[in-house]
Image (tube, rainbow over all chains, first blue to last red):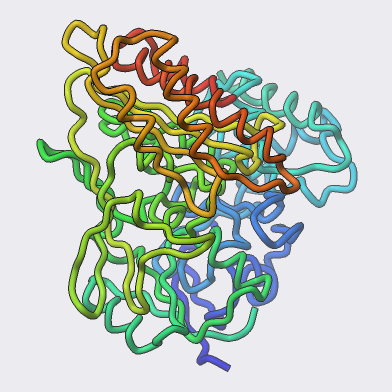
Length: 157
Length: 303
């Protein structure tokens, strides 16, 4: 087995050091080494978006990032979306619109939608649907998710 | 995933040493959207992964009078967000905006798309249309290859063991230049091309004659296909539907597709002609300045 690597990173705003094997993905390191189990493994190959995190301000699949790659980088996971014990407006609107059923895809959708609103505070419905095309949900039919994201954008505008 | 070592060199020379030390069991990593998926699925077994993204030359975007030099590991996201590239090479965005979804574009690079060497890669016909040169580094020094000569078979290319792609060089677009990439998929997003077509034209100053043109197809041969005869047939011809139809027929004749889960041979032959003609029309509209990038984004389903 290859030697473990110490990775120093900023995780949800906090300086963090963790040990990982070089072969571990960021998703595995988050869940298995750091106990952050909000990010989900759906497909494990970049198709479903359930593991999405924001890496240096850019939305990525954490299953397609090797954990050692994040040395010196900044990562925001679903655990970093709520602030000061208050749900983020996206989390609140997902509840109000019943934008989830089984919930496995939800962290990925919320992280993706956060990255969208950081990039474009006033997206059209088309913008939302296009941005979220890489997130799969097998329960909701997407409409309630899209409505929740648009509701947040409208209320922030 | 099986175990491997991870190194992140900060210079081209260090990367060459790291890859040389690993022999055929070391591979460069850029965005990882193909490499890590292949490692996860056990389709690839390595001793060493060499992350190239800490090397400034691999991450550089440089536009000057000599054209655009794009580091091989620059993510599609960074290209999409770069106004200077959008202004000078608007057709490039046709590809970078439709490779995977948002989070894939956050990592995937044009260099990686090229080195993965899929016959259906969405960037390669576009790179061929843009007359790109590939700059390669390796244990025997540096060399350059025309992009249409880079891929040699499905998943294979001219890179020797220990070599890696450093950058892609785009010539400065001549006056009255326009290009476009179109692909056909049976849905709106997130799919692999049934056929893709890249085209570029240079028009005369009065914009009525095609001075030169380049046409390339994806997913209709073992490698992305440069259809030189289609471009040659357009040179010196007036801009007209008849001229474009002739080039489209030549593209269709050059295609030698297979039937698979995505499409049949007759469908792909037909699409080769249709997409070539449409891509040429858009390239001409762009050369004439009669179509904006945003309008064009919608042609591939992107608003």
